[in-house]
Length: 368
Image (cartoon, rainbow, N blue to C red; front, side, top):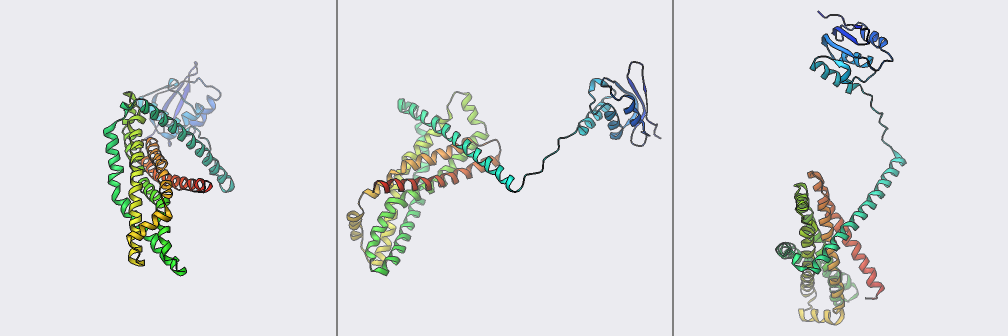
């Protein structure tokens, strides 16, 4: 049977609680206690004589104390103090949450955050580019700082291992261009000009575009995943503690590897694209290899080839930079790694398209 909750106030202002302070035994003792000690913030509550205590009784005591009951103002058993602390934390008022914005207000917030994120992204990109340029300067001054084994290994992975997919894709792109050009020009009786169409399209645009997009999917994602895994495992932080610059040990070899291999892959893609176009024109139009190559030399020339090749170093720098930067931005969880790898591929492909459009405008203004 429960003993009714009761209390007494000593002459020095301390409150001695007795009985069972439970939901069934309060009988208004909590309200009376609150009126008794109202306005006093230094009252000491002695709970050593309390029999049983539940959350209802604890809440009555905390409410009488004004909502806050520090441990220095309470005497009692350890489990009693623990329950009072738990109820005090639960009874503490929480700030009201504003409803989520909707409509135009929500759209304005999202646009503002997007602009801020874009500015932050541009700033961090400039910081990354500046650090990479500083490392390039150090390497040029002292070539012994180059980690040749890592550079050669990365060049093999990004270059030699990518040749089959680059050759296959470029061959079929050249064949598709030849098929479309032959079908369109046949209406005007000008099928022979399909050779010039293939030459200009492959030499000027498709060789570098196909190569860059394929390496954006292969190398940019690979760089982001590799550096992101190292960042998650705190290997990058360990390198900094040891005095090793991650840009010099990790970023520069990948940057140099793509700078070497993309021009070579572009040349291979050019040959494969022309071979695909030659196969179609020979089989569909009866234009032999000697005729095909002679028209390429006479009517297309080397200018378009060098225009396409001039884009290769820029594409290499962009792909390597985006992949490495996204990898170094990975947080400590797998979700962040997945987001950054996806962002590396998407950003690299977007940058390739924009840069190619810029080159097209530039060479148009130069009448090339």
